[in-house]
Image 1 (spheres, rainbow, N blue to C red):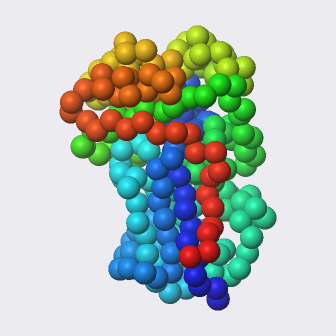
Image 2 (image 1 turned 135 degrees about the horizontal axis):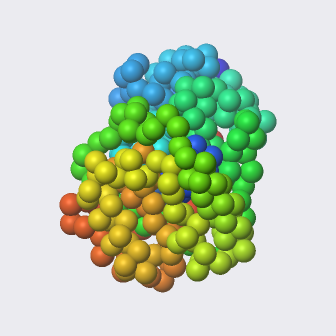
Length: 272
């Protein structure tokens, strides 16, 4: 078994408004896992559970500034890290392992959007086990607003209806298509409309008034688009890098605001 490696995995924001369980963006905020150099993570940690499920042996040290239970892909990043750590321990190359890691991580996570973004980097679309990077036609920063409270993904999913009206389904299909086109063409004026949603956000934001205030504040301060990050309670926004700090400064005092570049590399394994 190999030692002397470290796995580095970015955070993510999923859904981007209308693309429920189908799109995500990787963020330059990183979870790291390695075989030593600190106190081992407990066996209940999602990274360790993923590591064991893939045959990983021995202690796994995990360090992460990604807050859990906020909608920034902590569990997805942790599971990707654990699975890649098992691959690194066996000496497998990351590129050849990505598809299998995606499959396993999706099974553990229950949905693929966060794990795909963390694994591949950039903005991704994912369906049927396939991941495609969406080209981005202009520079964008992501501004995130992170409240102190947590939100369970399972609880947030229970807030959604079992069925949606046909008109709302059509609305979201159109917005998702427009979102991909707006990102690829570099059309910031289309992003605000493209991130509108009728499928999940209103049901969740009904119990997250402060997050709705943060989304409105970001748009009011000049963000191109803003959305509920994953299942929340964090909010995220696309902004011109030159205005990103001003957008962050306009967000409510009840949460922490960060300006993060889009991570372009995804999960990597370095020699330590």
